[in-house]
Length: 111
Image (cartoon, rainbow, N blue to C red; front, side, top):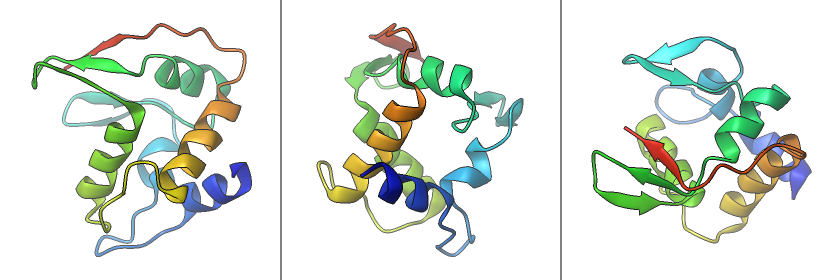
């Protein structure tokens, strides 16, 4: 699943030709004032992955990493991501392995 997740992370598709790496392969990148973690760098992926599930203040709900991935797919205009699908599990496995040894700070607090 890790290898599949890595392949999906770098796979470019959709109307904007985006991949996960388009937004999450560089440090100090922002979109609309929101800091985006570099999910290829251990410290940043460990901090990001370890903060989910998180309370989403703008929605007043606790959301999971699966939900976060689904929302990223929506923002990229990719086909909808099904919770519990092989794609969802593969991407979460890719992040979990890259975050290995990090500190779990969940539940996190997000804007």
